[in-house]
Length: 596
Image (tube, rainbow, N blue to C red; front, side):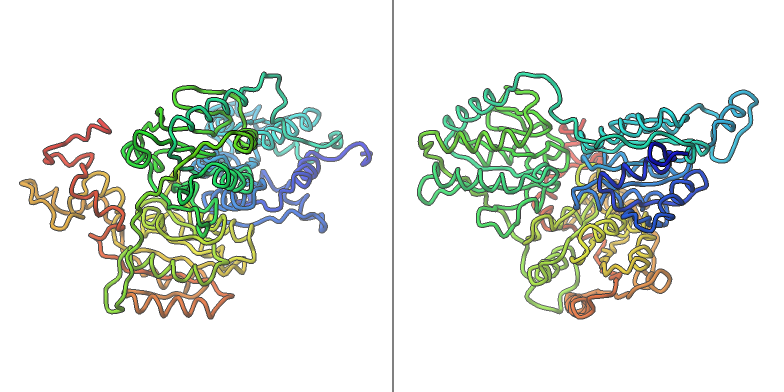
């Protein structure tokens, strides 16, 4: 083989991955992907590091955590069917939340495929259904290719990786084992994003005109800073927009502030003087915020369920710029990318006559201070103590799991930009602990802390072993209440009320047995997996452990935090009396009209 013009398919993919700056591959080794892994290992100068994970779920979430914090693609390697089927959930979450991941799936050889189709043989990890893997991943990736011939491989690889750059979402490559070491042409030229490579008449100027007109007609304004500011690296552009708006258009003592929501929390530092809190923006909340003469301006914010409580919030009081389009009231302007909109709106504000705007300042309830150390533990005292720690140790990234931990953590002030990570759209429980593995690789000089419920921890606790094996000083707080709290709250919140309603059906007065979680001795997990285990049942004990964590900067911890089974995050307390469970059948307002 002439190495000047040819290389193996494995070498070609390796070369393109290096070009894209893919530094980490997370996965579980299998025979079908071995030629690629061995090609990487044989090159001692390759910048690609192969990380061994406990399973494909922890690998997928680790890859997601790395890519979303680093802002660069990562890769996952799996082996046919049994591997990618396990990791399907993780890639779906990355697709929904726009995280760039390359999934590489090794497949049986062409000979094996022919025997299976024509003779009826089943090989390891095959089902008999033709090309089932790629069929499953096409709906949750922006490009998917099955490579069975080395001559076509360069074009298929380049096509998939170009889609990865263009859309910043997962892509999928399936390569038969007998093709990996077959010769193909060497790479020609460099890969680049296809973003903007279409012919279209820009709607940006029309979107700006409509936005200015609406803002002028509604002189009270507040910004909603969203996740796309982080995904696209547009934080500085947003801050300039905020500065220009305040300097040139805000009335004296009426500064224009901004809020975030769960998915975009910490995309802008929460130490910013114009930050007014992380909120859930329901239709009622927006109406209360802006009134009849105000407007909320969403910049890169998504109308996902967790951020808007599953409500359609678009109205004549909203401007929403995201997903390469702009809503101004009921008008929609397609194919306006976010950077173009922010820059153009900033320039429009620089040249427009004074709009004489007033700020909107929501009265947000902060976490209650825990003054005495003899009080028992709960969600509010836990997050308050964690907030105090993070304020002192600013080089901290807080990763929280879905459910009560995510709800409770929304009120924690995050002083550093991108210092908070949550899978707040897809909401797969178990995300946080393995995501922390990838996040630590992305920000090696920061300490990653995880807040996870015991139910979610059961899903992916093996990732603690990955933290230890990779020499990471990650801290995992397992909030142990013994139940799937968020599921109980959604189906029937009555047990959390103080006191609960005394229903005639006793089943409605207590936590459901199917929401109960097997009890583990969580603080002993590090005995098997590595690290230091601790247990906190009071505020005093937690403070002592946090000080030990501070004084032990090179070790990973698992901290078992005891939470009463009937406790909920403080932000839910005002809602408990009027909440209607999805199956709280004796509630006089059942079924809830917002859902049924």
